[in-house]
Image (cartoon, rainbow, N blue to C red; front, side, top):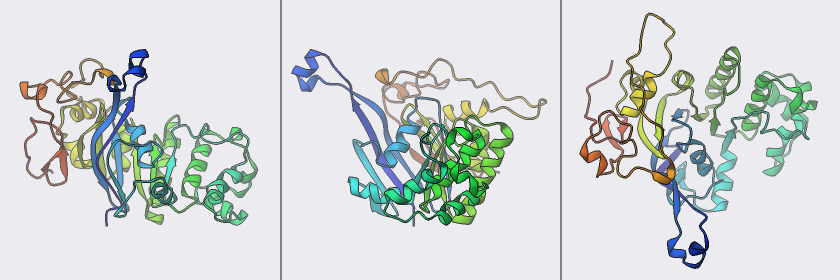
Amino acid sequence: MTLLSVQDLALDLPLRGGLLSALNPKSRRTLQIFADVSFTLNPGETLGLVGESGSGKTTLARALLGLTATTNGSIHFEGHPRRTTGDFAAMRRDTAMMFQDAIASLSPRMTIGALLAEPLIIHGQPAPKIKIAEMLALVGLPPDFATRYPHELSGGQARRVGVARALVLNPKLVIADEPTAGLDVSVQGEILNLMTDLKTRLNLSYLIISHNLAMVRHVSDRIAVMYLGRLVEIGPTRETFARPLHPYSQSLIASEPLPDPRKRRQDLAIKGEIPSLLNRPKACVFQGRCPHVQPICRTDPPNLREISPQRFVRCHLATPIGALA
């Protein structure tokens, strides 16, 4: 059974207007944050979500948890629709969030033990000290950390506490927003190895949001590329990195640094800046920066279509490909 299924999800936010908007509701404008978002996530799978800042990745994550109301589309968790506040409250017991700023996400007035106990108390479960000690041990921290405060932790230790807090309710899905942000390279590796180990031991699914393509490539089974509120490509990680189909994906992957100085990437740098959401391009959202733009790209919005097995792309110019090596 599919763990998470998202279909045609969209979010429009009202813009504050002046006196005319207040007097005439029909003149009120909305800002489209994301639209036509469709994807699935299977048990035990890691899906990496990448894209430039402002593409809507974090807002989408909040919408999946019911923290932001959507204007269209559907969310199904284990086959059950999530529509009401009660539906999402039940889903939150099986879904956890790891926030980008690990230390800022922890209340400075609470001990680590109290922070780990808080989700249990909110959901009406006992929070014995042995449970807290088990969660600290799970992420490689000694039991005496339960009496510490967030300001006493290093960045890596705070991230481990964030992992423990996310897992304290035994969730099935963890949404991790930039899980290695602000960490040294060696510490990043430790956190990724920890998350990978816990995924296997606990049969977790991850939705990992990141700008770090190397990290996403290392831990993800599939990758989804988001641009200006649209998913433009979804596919198995290895195949997508080997042969990206969408021009935006090609540019992102071409910009990834190579460890071998003798190898050079083809220069596919994206020209221009990402447009404002207030002036979203009509039809294809990438048309203003695409090196292969055609007249149809300016008139007809492309659909996300399966171009090859498990390969989805939102581009008029993409054509089916044969088996990848």
